[in-house]
Figure 1 (tube, helix red, strand yellow):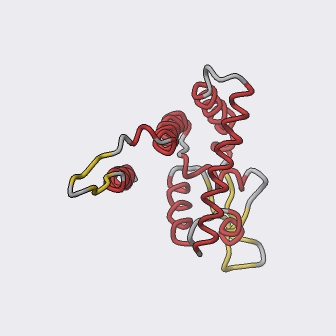
Figure 2 (cartoon, one colour; figure 1 turned 90 degrees about the vertical axis):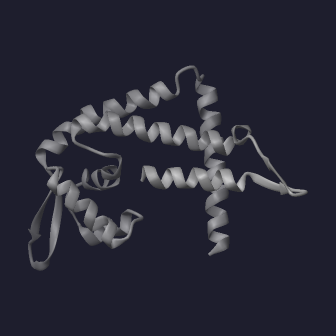
Length: 171
């Protein structure tokens, strides 16, 4: 995924170059809010990954863990709640099972399905993993007033809404 991010930045750099009278003028991408949104996102993901690693979790595990905190679910039920493809979820669940985060048990009355449970060890590690993530989030917001944090959240929600609306219109 790091390689994909590097390729994305390369393409963004190329897009930021404008051909003008046969001369390529490079735009300073640091002058755009989207550059800083991308930088902040990359740094946050890296910091969250580092905070979760000692607890046996990764960022990709979080949507599944969130769904399973309410109790066991089938893979079909997880697919309805988590926006990933079936092969992606299968690979993720295989990694989580290998890492001792989940276990699969036969679903009573349905030989084709299995129920996916958080392991007791994973459930026991969740509070300290959550605390580590809160610490990262607080460090990221260091120096912001509550008002500034609220304003930032509203602005980022608008960005997300704009991009979601654009995707919906493009489809």
